[in-house]
Image (cartoon, rainbow, N blue to C red; front, side):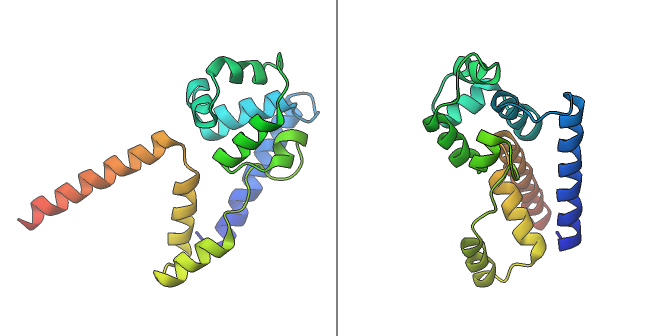
Length: 153
């Protein structure tokens, strides 16, 4: 993905988020709304899947989203760690949803394997994808590999 394309995607995402905030009365989302937005709109996973990733029940996530329970420091840190979410976005609503992938690691990987911008973007997207999307990609690649093997026989 080119820098221009990445910038365009970032702009569109920010625009959509601002539209969502405007739609909800022009006010910033609450912590519960941010958790629900992250889970449903961005990650597109169930309460159960989200809870399992951070070690809590689906009812615990539901209580956080409905704000019948407060977000604890431990759960906030687990969400940030498991989904690469920015702590300040989650707790205060400031900044971007996701943290940048650690530059050092991806630079080394790109250099050692002669990766271009598309390769790097693909890896970042895959790493941050929900488990069901990763599984779909793996299944597609397995089918593709099997077809290639058949055609080479």
